[in-house]
Image (cartoon, rainbow, N blue to C red; front, side, top):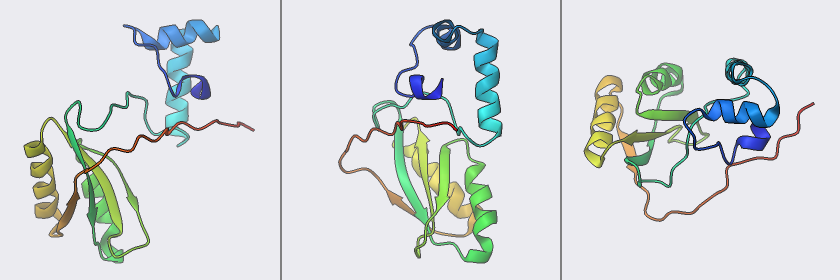
Length: 142
């Protein structure tokens, strides 16, 4: 199911029903399978991926967080609906995340809110040039 639809969910009113029809199962079975995959950590999200800054605005951001505060600061950052995900890097700038909003002012407001709540400066790294990467992976399930 994941491998077959990660690069193209049907653009219809009930996409899970369309997927179910192609797989020969019920819509409820598709929804339940996705729920289980998400709960098990095998799937982080199901949703559209748009070319950056064509629908709304986004930026890559980074913070230099003391190791003993990293987990708490990451939780604060993750609590923002405008933050898609965050991840740790082995670098002075060790917490990276993507902020999305309807416009650049919304992105800036989220950055300012994160700085205010954590007391840590956020490095805003807006996209200068778009490089399309296919983030789909051919999956092998054991």
